[in-house]
Image (tube, rainbow, N blue to C red; front, side, top):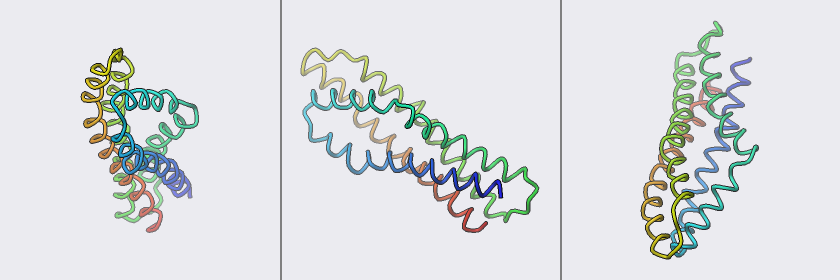
Length: 161
């Protein structure tokens, strides 16, 4: 029962995170491609500032915590769990942890670099964008897929449950 409750929680928080990342893949990033370099840099800086709020941070950190807790409790509980379900719990945990690691190793440093970039001229904005946009979007897509893998792993484990 505890594993199922944890898995349901992991589905919710990882689903919220996957949805946010997906929104960037299919809406925010394509819209930002249409902006001038100056608009892009100022807009992305505004997003970086606005997102760092308690609600987002709670979901962001709860996703891997609930994921790892679910897999660990499912493994250690002694409750007979279908072997496939156990593998799916660990796949979910791996997907969630992968998303966290990508965010911390790639996307956050890129965000920090964009925030610290000198943007006094259009050429500065253009240089900041060139060093940011393609790499950030590529890794955002990868972490989005990783988060979707997490949701699917936990949802399928629950279904087998």
